[in-house]
Length: 262
Image (cartoon, rainbow, N blue to C red):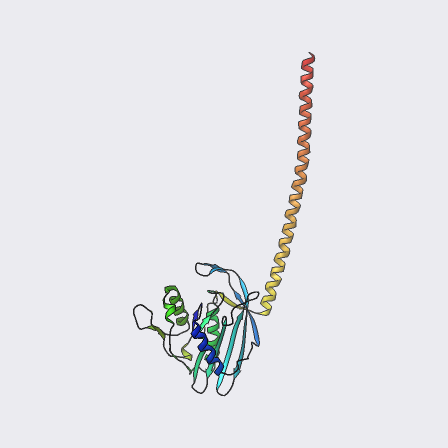
């Protein structure tokens, strides 16, 4: 399991074939929670990262042979591709094995903590039940290693969850992930980037926003009153100045008339 921006067509076909052999293909999300994507500094690669609220949805299924945790992230007002923001975590009770689908996790928006969050939820879910299960080792996609930043981001993602990344060459092109035990994995994510928002907390945020809006309206009204006051004072001053100018001109004319008469 890695976090990537795109996935090759062959990988998509392989994932589709594997999914067809597994049960619960029609399972939809049954539980929903709100997540807060914290506002972050503009990133050189991914651009502006404003405050956003998204929906985390999931469903579970269990049988004697398998268990499934199906997760997804919905972005209000924005549509994403079917393969994006989606992760299935499968437990094979016959082989005592855990695996993830798809192998290459695609998320949108990037660099907001969504990938690590989904992986962490799946790992935590599995560790509570089947910590002795294994996660098979796998070769990493060579295309991710062509760009150094992409490779480092991928390796950091895997290592942060407790996977061991090894390379067969000095150029870091032929990489792989070693087999791991579920109990040795780490179900943590960057809480500075992404947090759960409970219903009461969301209500308090709305209440606070409404209160702030009301306070801004009061301040705006006070400013408008000050502006109107200044306008009235300005009008009065203009009238006074006009009168003074007229009186001065009258006096000047009167003095000229007196001087010319004598």
